[in-house]
Length: 392
Image 1 (tube, rainbow, N blue to C red):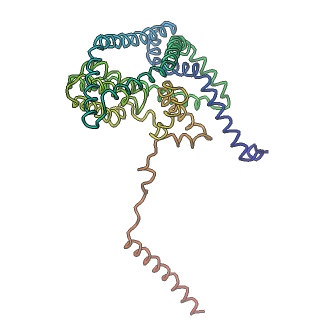
Image 2 (image 1 turned 45 degrees about the horizontal axis):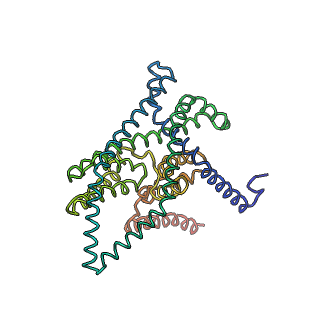
Image 3 (image 1 turned 90 degrees about the vertical axis):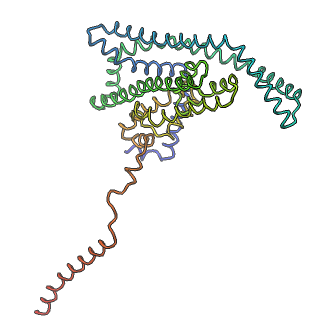
């Protein structure tokens, strides 16, 4: 008996929804280990070409993986060192920044007193009340943030270990997939794995290159405006591209506030907004499409939905992992018959090709000519029949 006729459609739909909810709950409950494994898998894919190149030079696999990890840790350590140096310089100048910030607040209070008749003493009391409320409520948030940051750093220290074993046992994992999907032909499974690797590898390498280009453009624009710590602000906004669509917007807030406080004219802040807006337009319309290409062919609506869901599910990690995980899911959906509609839904629709008519509609004159030809042909066929009838 067919399994689809055994249970009614509402029961099968309810069972599917329950399974989806259980999977989402499991991903939320195990977010620590799941995000750790996903980060490790993505980094392993990023390091795989270097590891394979070293192995082609007759270097043992363990030694090749060790060299790859040393390179990765060295690059990350260099980035952290540069950022910490910029942060240290920024901290040294913080008292000057605080004095200028107080001057800006005092100027705003005088303007509010002159324009709206708000007494300065009343404004100070209101600011103190809001500040006390923020400090009182932020204590628990700071504790939660510190504990989560500490646990995150502890988890990230395990990433190199997981990356090492993923690269070391990659053939073992492939054999496991062959056994798990034994009814699927190996060449088809290899095709799916190869496309997943191409998508993720292209996305990661392209993203690193895009971050470098955007960091250079941001820094150049801030240097032209004469903003201090241009390298720090420009690189920070570029790194926040890891959070698609909204990262560079968040990264532009800090240099805008800094320019508004430290510069005499508010036009510097307007200039900072203009620089970051221009760079964002370049990044979205020219840099990312040409560098990353169509590796992650997820339509913007689906991308925004998965970003919101990823943020709700895993926080910042969910925002970073949303697009590559969705790209992997799309590749899998495109190769499974029952999931192909969902792969189509995640993809970028080509309206110009699908909605454009394949042939032009004939003109009215050509229709009339065709009609006349058909009528003449029918008339010629009827004449011999009429002549035969008369003879009979």
